[in-house]
Amino acid sequence: MGIIERKEREKQMRRDLILQSAEAVFFEKGLRAATIDDIAAKAEVSKGTIYLYFSSKEDLYYSLISHGLSVLLKIFQDSKPEERRPWEAITGFSEAYFRFSQEQSYLYKMLAATEDPVVSEQVSPEVLSQLQQTSDHVLSYVAQFVQKGIETGDFRKDVLPYDAVILFWVSLSGILNLKARAAIMVQHESITKDSVVCLVDYNSLYDQCVRLLMNFLIADSIQFKDSLKRGNHGTSIPGTSSSKFNRNKHKISKHSKSVK
Image (tube, rainbow, N blue to C red):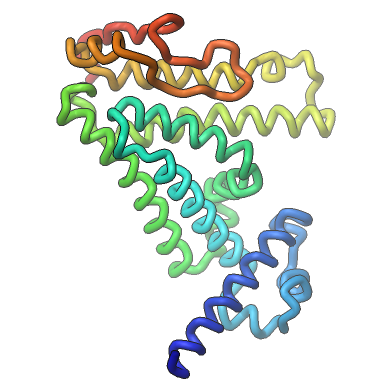
């Protein structure tokens, strides 16, 4: 390995160390309370070294969000969607997204920070651009399986792939976000446990939402009905009592006329 290659590798390793340290500090203190000094101390580097890689703590935070999206993409890829039918791939993504929100809860919560305009306004254009590219990559990866379903006749012909992916994304994220907020409000005694938002079984609601969204996508085709008869398909959301999409417990209903 030459001198240039070795220096580049060392630079990347130092950047990764700073990101790992930042994640630990943000997890402990949160974005508002955390400081560059805290991150430098955790990484055992000087404050100036951090500024060689990141212009602010907000840039660090958003760089970690890009990392979180990359982790989510890897989880989607590991579900081997290319070996499954289109509806199985999409429901598999939905199940994987649920697991990600539970098993990588801090990374999931960081994704929600992109909705805060006060924070995003302090992020450099370069970091925002990288985040957009990573986000687009994830959405495009999922959209290709919606397109595949349209081409095979499993999904409706009038469905737009990116519209469908965004619909899934915002619907499922909305349920997960409300679940998290309800838990936080109860913890801080902002609401009582008998509040309406606390009486909902969010795991079951998530599963029902996936079913409704799949009903929106599915075409009224003999091909799909025949494949339903051959075996199980769909997701299994942990903690729900009726989360299996199978021929004994659930049949996807016929979709009505095209929704304009």
